[in-house]
Amino acid sequence: MRRRVALAVGTLLFTGCATRHGLYAWGSYEELIYSSYEAPGKIPPESEVDILEQDYQKARAASRALPPGWHAHLGYLYYQLGKPAEARREFETEKAQFPESAVFMNRLLANVR
Image 1 (cartoon, helix red, strand yellow):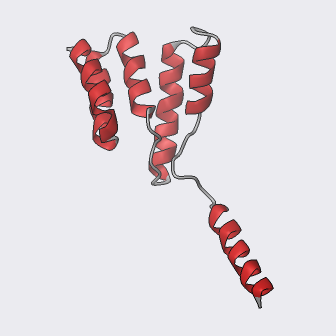
Image 2 (cartoon, rainbow, N blue to C red):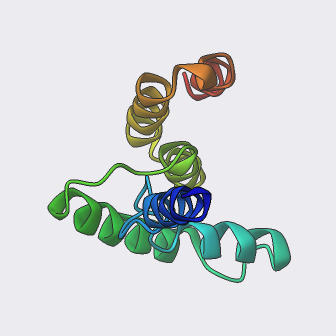
Image 3 (tube, rainbow, N blue to C red):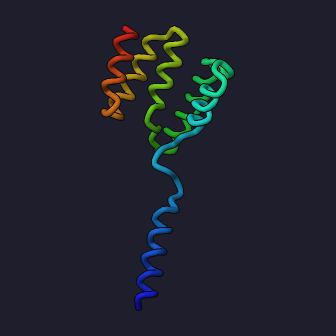
């Protein structure tokens, strides 16, 4: 009896952990962040924006959420490209979706204005 209960509990745990999708649609975000730290400037901001915009379209089509920091990174790229309106939009989106980032996003927004 104990063995059956243990087997059932183990099966439920492993089944629960084996989800088809994670919580967020990461796309290329992690690789872009890693490469920006590993070799700054290797990927031009324009290319990063294009890649992230494609990831956004895929996530939206699949009704999946983007991870924390995604909009902030895109906003930073827009800021680098001299597009303050787009940067503000992304920083505001990050702040709305992840309220714990509000202090940092407010500082970035103050610098963009």
